[in-house]
Image 1 (cartoon, helix red, strand yellow):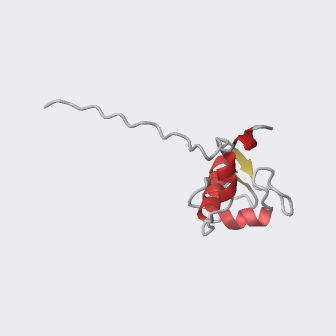
Image 2 (cartoon, rainbow, N blue to C red):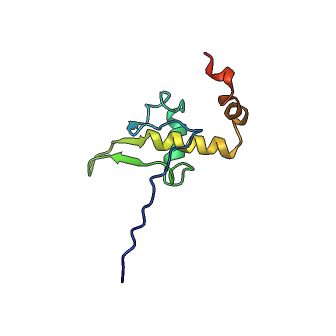
Amino acid sequence: MSQVLIEIPEPQPSATHQDYPNTYTAIPPNGKVCPHTGLKHAQLYKMLTNEGAARPYVRVVSLKEPGALKGKTVFHVGDMLRYLDRLADAQRSGAERKASDNSPRATEH
């Protein structure tokens, strides 16, 4: 019996999406805006709770010591931006932007 080696290529980054940061950041304090997403504290918590819309797609870590009353919640920035881009694609948001990204005028700046 002979062995066959099958090479699985690494996924190529999409030409329409930027490279996403591979970092975690804290959910901002109440009333403050996340510098990466532009979302406020309450909206991020709502999206990242166990029942939140983004939770299946975004890595979330609770940094709370056992027995502590308070902790810190952090989320993966790249995952969240990827989720928001997929949501925009699903809603066909920015469809004209994608077409204009390939035009010569868009690169003349």
